[in-house]
Length: 198
Image (cartoon, rainbow, N blue to C red; front, side):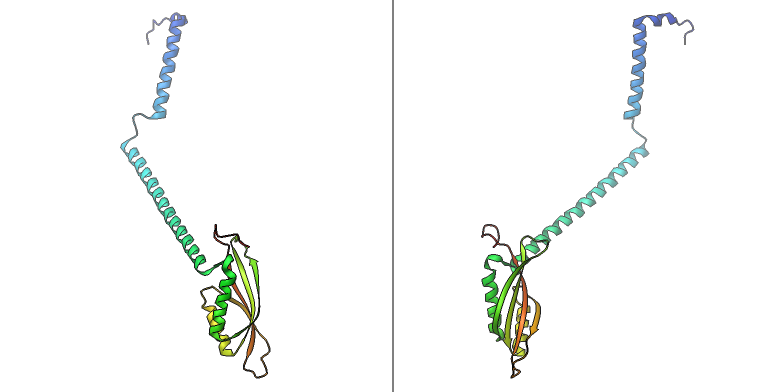
């Protein structure tokens, strides 16, 4: 630094402003270099950064692939569930005639004689569209006929479930049995546009 520097010149406003602006400019340039690192890192730094980005991209692609498979499984499960309901669960608007016809066919084929019957509908927890239909009915026949009736109900396409069987006292000749069945099946609400669920 020049020993002959005149400190009195700094007292002049023009020179003082130039010095202040120069100092601020130098500080701004220094901060920009620190913040933006315009010259980049070393080759090793850049390699490490590229490796990290590749690993992050591979992890993100793996998560996307897992999510896609999950979406496909959910869609397949939904389609399978809808197909099951359509095939095995009768709509409410036609359930009486369909179930009655199926039980009449089973009764005829097995040779049992139908007695009194009643039907009850119950809600199923967690479902707004499916109800449980309970048919309580008595049937009379020989042991072989009752066995065949049970077998046919079990194999029915209507998805019947025999909840309970209660045998009454056998008749005097001992050949005929009277059995009270509680048979359950599921009923779904009518599809949209086909009428309201009653």
